[in-house]
Structure formats: C-alpha cells, structure tokens
Amino acid sequence: MPTVTDTPPRTTDPAPTSVTASPPATSSPPTVVLPDLQGMDGATARDHLETLGIYAVGFEAVNGKSVLIKSMWQVVDQVPAPGAAINPRDGVTLRVDRFKETTQPEQPRPTEQPSEDEQDKQETRSEEPAPQRSEQPGSGTDPTYRTCAEANAHGHGPYVRGVDEEYGWYQDRDGDGVVCERR
Image (spheres, rainbow, N blue to C red):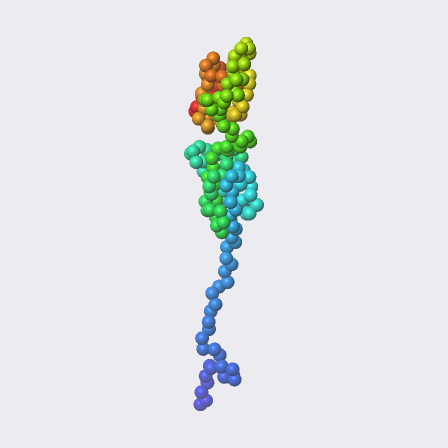
C-alpha cells in the first residue's frame, strides 16, 4: 500500500527559519516648547498657550487668593519652566501676582534737607501769605504716586485730614478722615 503524507512538496527556496519582528510603529506624542511667559498678564499668557494647543492652564496666586480676572494678574513663574518641551495635553501652571503699575517711573521723594536755592525760595514764600489749601478729598494729585496702592507699596500712608498734606491728594471714599489706609 502506498504511504500518504501531508507534507507539501519542497520548493527550491527554503522558508526562513526565524522571523524577526520589528516593534510596532508608534508615533511620539507631539511636543511644544514652552515660551517664557513671565511679565505677561494672565489672560494674554493663557491666550498664547492656547495658540500653541495647550488648553490645560492653571493659575496659582502667590498670595493664595483666587484668580478671577486673569488680566489683573502678572505671570511671575511657570511650571514647567520656559524652554521645556511638553505634550500639549499636559498642563501648565502659571504663578501670578497682582499686576504692578509701571506707567510712571518712580521718582525719588524729596530729602529732608533743602538745598540753598530751595531755602531761599522758602524764605521768599514765607513772606507771602500762604494759599488756602482745600481739605476736600481728591482736590490735588500726588506728584509721585497715582494711587494709594502705589503709595502703600512704597511704605507711605495712611494720611489723616488736617494733619498730612497728602490727605488732599487722594479720595476719602469712606469719609472717615483717613486716606491710603493699609490693608
């Protein structure tokens, strides 16, 4: 009786004995290089990150307060740091502080000792009757600081009606006779 086998006939090209599997093709996650956002207001910094495809933006105030109006806060730090390459789906945390007004350069306060020219002017002025100064709030302006917040930030205030000349430079909104109270 003839023998039947299930082995296919051999071809001239032998089959490879081992197969090398290459790793599955993976695409690396997209990366974005973070720009330096320090000095920007919070809203502008957030908008800039969104143009890069980063939508997970957290805000952390250095004073622990809630950050509601982002444009009123200035970026002072960011995590991850500027120049870091991140996946846009990862978040960015912006540390912010209340915006500091920089519209006017800081002017030095007058010294306590007037120069000789100033002494001559003061002596001349003392002979003339002093002009009547209004005690109404907001009747003048501070030549150095535009707001009480600026004056307080530089160590000045509070000012009392009838005692401090600076009282007339600011508004006494609560009518208690004191302006630029520190909070």
